[in-house]
Length: 296
Image (cartoon, rainbow, N blue to C red; front, side, top):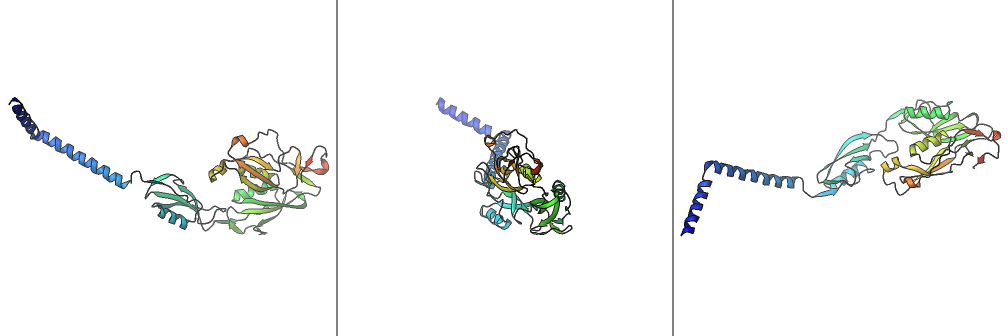
């Protein structure tokens, strides 16, 4: 009997507790809050497609039409954020993207791309005939061009520009061609068997190595990357670990000789060469045969 009375008394207290208007309001508020939280979690889980990520596809190098199709196939969205012109890239192709390829993203994510303009910017060709190679290089680069192939013919004006060409045709001053184009130069090589030294390129980045080759009155040959180079950004950071012809102190080359380069990101492959190189022109008639090494 005592247990039944205790049970009835407990039940009465509980009912009285829940029928209290203040307590009832608090309980209803907590219940409403819990329902809202649960509904919000369900909505967010559906909206963000929780745990349904996929790698961003590779778009760089693709024509924009193909890039759009690739994005659609992956249930993503594409947005062109910028357009630039790079002469050695295919017009209308993707040259950069964000997020990068392989980045894990959720479906319907926007991928921003920069494309290469289909219509290049055209600018006037300057006249560099009569200038030295060093001066001509500076003028062309300042105007937005690059030095192309160097060729030489006998002339008293050693390393002076005699002619300038674009795509095999004379590049007349004032003609308009795409910005970033390469201008080929014909220069004088002297009349007494003048030659040029071999520049030391080991340890340099590609752009610095190319500049040094041109300044030595030589041409850039084949460029090869080892297995450590897997992307365009890698190629920008890579350094020369081998060159051909190899650097030899006091060795000389004919003007216009091609120099091949091998590049890597592996510092261990780059030999340490502390000897200073010279790109100064030397006259064979004025150099002792015992001191000079001639490389044909």
